[in-house]
Length: 205
Length: 205
Image 1 (tube, one colour):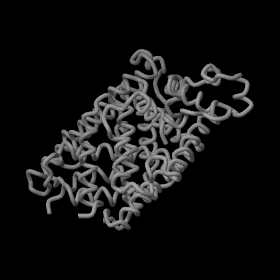
Image 2 (image 1 turned 45 degrees about the vertical axis):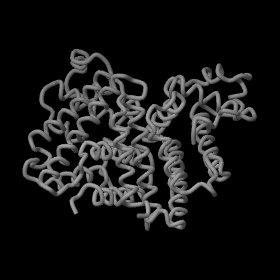
Image 3 (image 1 turned 60 degrees about the vertical axis):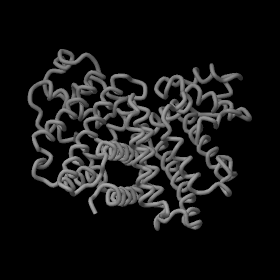
Image 4 (image 1 turned 180 degrees about the vertical axis):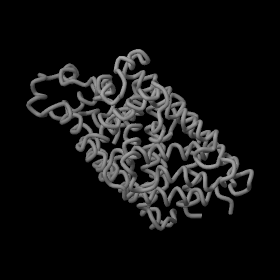
């Protein structure tokens, strides 16, 4: 899942979702209107109504599309060559995405958007379902990396799924804090402690 | 910081904030109106306008009040006797608040509310300031516990502030996940891994 999902939209539906994503980044969820999406969309805005029911249908389709793209990239080795890159590098590069300081504007906007939309899940069943799926996708992805590492004897955990659940939770906290406070002084501390945990509890000695 | 902050409001301002809190729990931020707060408030609704400028002034004052109450309870040993309870018990009971399964309705509503309001901080400077302060308060609280533990030789970390930053971040992730997904299967995993980390990197051997 990443802001690159919409770089080369193919077909009308993807173009509409790309316009939805750009509009969400500019205006946020609250001020999102189909009219505003229409202004970002290069074809006739009436096409939007032809393909999507309402604002939430668009936003949820946009979230689902990004997650689908992420799943496809893992399966096809698009993030890095999943079958040849060593598990520790794969794990570290996944964590680095969230933990590297000085995120660029695209990444910052993406994190803020996810935090804003995730908060909707507190009161909206459809968003809740999306984030259930999203958490499961990331937990499964990390579990696979951890299992590969155990098999290759570079990791030592007996419970890859448990470690994955912990990492997904901490990264959710990282995204929330990065999106909602100005300071980033805590970020390096989190990175260091996460590494101390991995050294002590996951990486083979 | 906890939903108990409004149990015994004293004075008009606190009664207004207690009514704001109850209304927020019932309707969420988006559907919050001063009229609805007025319905929860037992005196004349016009008093609300006398004391507070607008909806956000009320919500931010409500958040600030809860955080003030938390700070007061720490200072006066109201959570447990801060000066006599051992550091490990203090740390564990703080973590348990967020990690214990089967939260009651009050606690669940409180977590959902914080997640919803925190998401506002992505686009609103005033909320951002509140959550900056809030993160600092919790980091400082945990740092004090960790420093006490090091002094009493029950903890071994060389960087209490760094550990505190990590814990606050993971707990932010716990609150987000508990408020936005149905399943809690991941929660026990997070608890176990957090303990593994503390055993390996913080508790004295």
